[in-house]
Length: 134
Image (tube, rainbow, N blue to C red):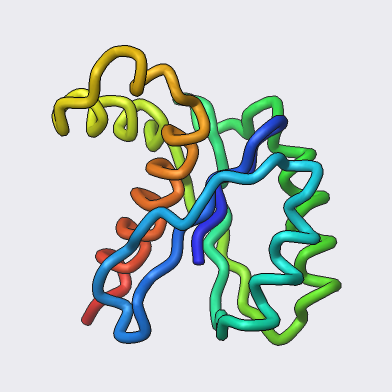
């Protein structure tokens, strides 16, 4: 699972059992993320959660970094059996937007920020899977 945590919305992506393809699952309001995850974990097995780590071009943490750190700490406390991995997510939202353009979505559809967050989480998960293959 990958989580693209945001102040208002959080994009979530998952992979198949064989961990070949990352797919967007949904976007939830950030204030409901823990109740969503609790319900999801009741029916689905998750061994790792990749959490995006937004950084600026100069490699410093972004303004939302402290909020994400608190989220990760709480997540680790609630689900100690699940490995949590932080991964640089620079440009995932821009790549997600470009992906929407390349796939032919109309301008109105490209304004759907929830879809951008979901696609960004998918890109994060696919990048993680690609970089961790032997």
